[in-house]
Amino acid sequence: LPDSKLTRIYTQNIDGLDHQCTEIPKQKIVNVHGSISQAACEGCGEGMDFDDFCRAVETHIKDIYHPEGDGPKESKPILCNKCQRPLVKPKTVLFGRSLPPEFFELSEEDLPTLDL
Image (cartoon, rainbow, N blue to C red; front, side, top):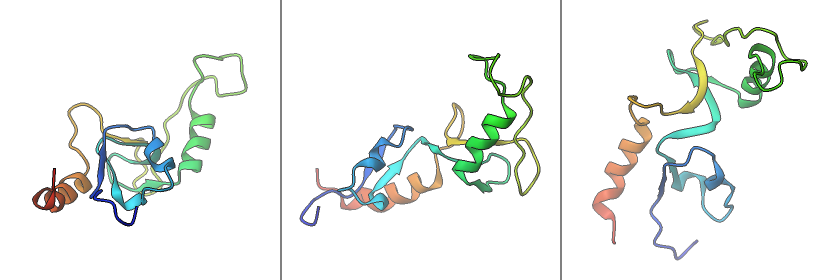
């Protein structure tokens, strides 16, 4: 996209499909409502490797759709590695929560220069 007028893509999608388009640089995509492909502690903000988070879900959270499977019979919290609180979840914005700081910072930078 060398001659593109694209300033940035602001998307409400949380599925991460926008990042699969290899022609759009990652730094041009802003996930306004976060992404299910990242995890962090809601309390202290400490990030968690997403593969580690997925493994923790498999070993800590009861599978309500296949209770007869190999998963745990009871759910237990996934603790943050830093603060040890049970607040680790995908980095998505839930109702009533603030949008990520990146949205406000980049939109403030982008809005004055937009050419619609």
